[in-house]
Length: 301
Image (cartoon, rainbow, N blue to C red):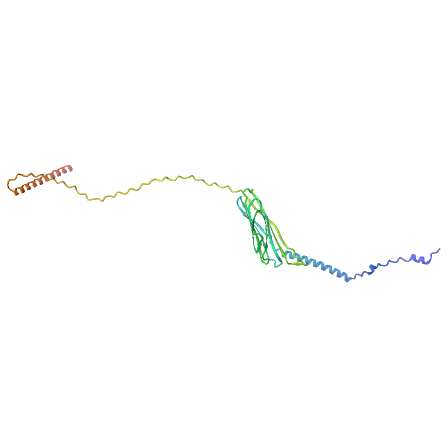
């Protein structure tokens, strides 16, 4: 039995595609212009982001106005009882108004080999929170007074080497931090603060205390006994020479005159007798001189 023509037609006719849904029918078609616009917006966003990152990086480098700081010790070799001075500094350079404030700080722990530790904080165009203190643990900071001008901060630590400090190198570490806050805004946000933070060490070599050299002891010297000094004897005055005269020749006393009895001649006879007696006396004297002369001649001969 042959099939009907309508059934044969249904077998030959291919199936028809399903009708699109309502959502797909409502979606607009994509034009080439819209695609190019979307790609341009994407590129602009990428470029804007890169520019923002570059500005942010530039602002961070511009804020790097604190130097790395320095730490030193004087002397670098010491013995027990010696005084050692540690110095830490940090300097600020103006950044042309990018920063609104700047601060710095020092932190340190002085080793136990040092005693009697005292410190002071000072600066130029810089005010420390605390001007001085003592103790082996140190923490002090401060602010730049005028950020448009150069500034510096200094920490000075004085310590004495302990009597029982062991010989050898001793490292002392001081940490220095500097920071600043900027007024530069990138995409509506404040730029990151500049941080300069680091620790530096300085070494002091402790040596044995020199052995004191004993001072020579001098034996006491006896003072010489005082000897009595004889007073000088006054000089005997020298008598001036006097003229010496020959001793006077004794004059023989006149022999007693015996008065002769008066003969009645009166005064004339008395005078005669007197003359006679005088003559006898003169004769006796002459005789005596003659005898003396003879004796003298005899002695010389």
